[in-house]
Length: 178
Image (tube, rainbow, N blue to C red):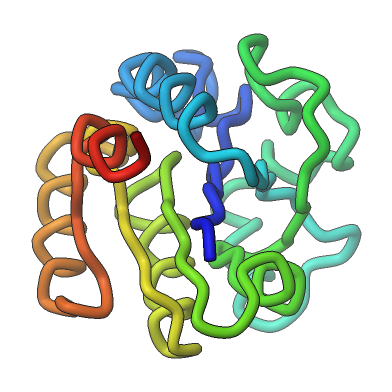
């Protein structure tokens, strides 16, 4: 079965330097992500969006980040220009694994993950998929963290889940999918 490419949260709220959630290396992931799209036919773009009304532990979270309490159709939550207009899987949670991705992957399937941030939404998506029995590849050079140290720490943590989770490069994915 062919892998499913999941592109996590390639949104303006993480790309634009003036955002409270700016990811400094965001622009670095664009080119390898575009290459991955050419290699893997099944692509799912995800978006992190704020809930209409935060509950539970999300209440103090949004008290810390009130600027993010915007509707899903706000400018900040749109995909960046390079991917604008693509259909999205929207979630109000960090992790994007759930019934929608499980259905896209199918039994015994494989996920290839790219996006932001490595140390939050990519990490939580990868670990939930691994727990569900899915083979996961995280494309290191197509991901960015809140800073380089956090990016590397998250990659190191995910490497502990081998052989269920593999940290790879876009070049390695290209060679696997030729």
